[in-house]
Length: 177
Image (tube, rainbow, N blue to C red; front, side, top):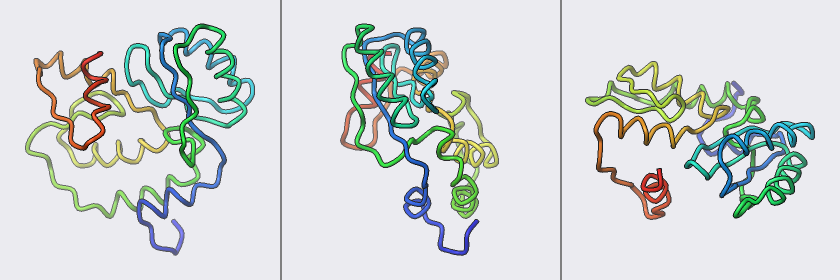
């Protein structure tokens, strides 16, 4: 870690590797994965968010994202949108800030949860603080498995979800899953 103060904002802003993110709707995971492999010939490109059965977000270098968009549009994607983000979040391109991010996470005063937490890095429940910290750190470079999480909740018999915030995006995705 560097000598400067490590806050979530300063750590994210310190990522120096150029990159971005692209949302794709209307293609299944197998097709998105196949197109991602082709586009990754132009640079780092990963499946960063599993938002729904036909909604994904890719993260990587700009050239690979642009190539993926062309391929996805030609393959019948309903929509492909380059997101207005500063970095390639949830991808290996964020690897340079992992140590600083670890410092932020290690500084959090976490207590053992009263109820199991479902981690979106694994779609598994945990109660240990160490597992939660590892997941928070991994989140920088690994995908968000929202589809897997919703299916895991359904498998546990959970039928009601409450979305905190005003976007309503996560709730809409959960209903589609």
